[in-house]
Image (cartoon, rainbow, N blue to C red; front, side, top):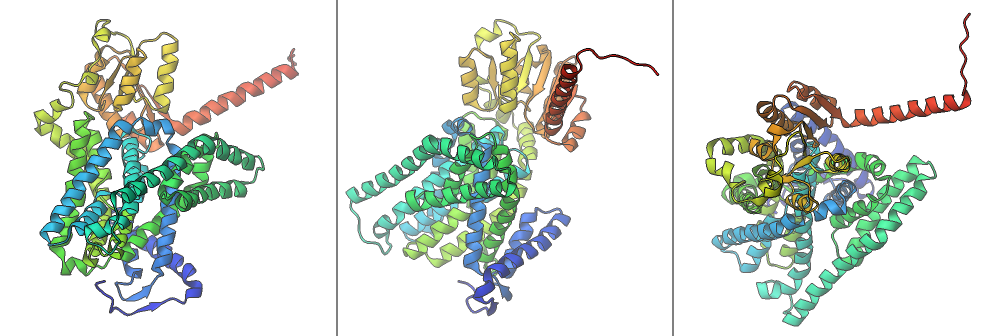
Length: 586
């Protein structure tokens, strides 16, 4: 490493866990607060805290091995939380874009890394490991970015998570195949023949398949039942313990028995527990731990970084950062557009993947151990991870401005999403009916789906605007008119006949895009009634300035519904106990 000569005071091993946690949380709080005051993302402060307690700066040093394990727990808990929010249907709904998209993006990013490594004079094996490490995004960074923007349940969020799951599966396979292939690639492994290699691949895929099958067949019944049994004890402590034990236990079992990563194991644990009616409570109970251990992840990444690399090797670091933030993001951008998804979705997925993290570190460490990757390659990967993680919030903040800028200056960009796309316009059979007075529903998620089904059952004409192309195809197969695209673009609302609609229902909690839809709807149809879903009072206040007819805040509507039910039950009980009320006067 760059600074092996730096002398640091090591904490006695007996209290290293306590000291590491205390130092990490304390400094993360301090520098996170400073970063927030400077209008920077708090994670920048967490990274700086890690650098200060790492082995490459003078002064106190925390236990890196313990910090790494604590960070791994953070990854598991975060992926568990994602699984609690995403159903199997949600994941399958994006498979047609996530599966080929992730594989193609990994291939492009790996080739870019190999090209740069070849220019530097590295071997084929070094270039392969280097490229693979630069191709896979960080689980924690992506999930925190989606959660902070409240888009985890959106179409863009589902595509990004599905993409991430495919990347993780590919990396699991790469970690298994690298040791037997090391000899061929120039490392220190025994030679392996084709039969052994195919056996290894088949064995790995078989393990993953068995694990997934067990979780979907057995886990979906067993673990929700277990959660319910614990809930019946009315002990909050036992319930929280059950949730955390399930998350970490399944994750560990997946890794130990089936060779699946901790993150993927925890993700499937969340997905099976989502089948329980108590999944929302499970998500709430585990949230504080997820947030706390996520902070430890960023601190542990900072501990790995040697800041002197910025002075000693700036050009190579710049090349790595360009591949991570620009190279593979452009590849993802082109792939998503090629599948005819909206410009906003292409930019969101690109921003989601513009960083690297935990799998990159594992690949780099394995590459060095196999003598495939030089130590300087590992250092460059660490530097690229820290810089890309720090810049990722900025990249996300550029999505909307960049989308507007591209559309305002490029007629091709505005047209290419719609040109020749049969899902971007209503089918001829629908056009012939000349829809008038229908309800236009934007978003076919949990809320939009229920509204659309209820209206259809009453014989009310409905048109759905949805970004998920597979959902649009399924709706059309059921005879429900639907168009594919981002309804924040006027062209999509035009194709959905907003000018002749009676009511516009915006059933997606994205206030920025909702405001653009409201503006377009008012211009094209001043008499339309607009109903909007939002997450918070702050967003509701912002939306009210655009003059929608009704804004529904999720928590408020839940409380109102419960209140109405309680009042009705109280009235019923009074009526039953006092069937013939009398009036007295004094």
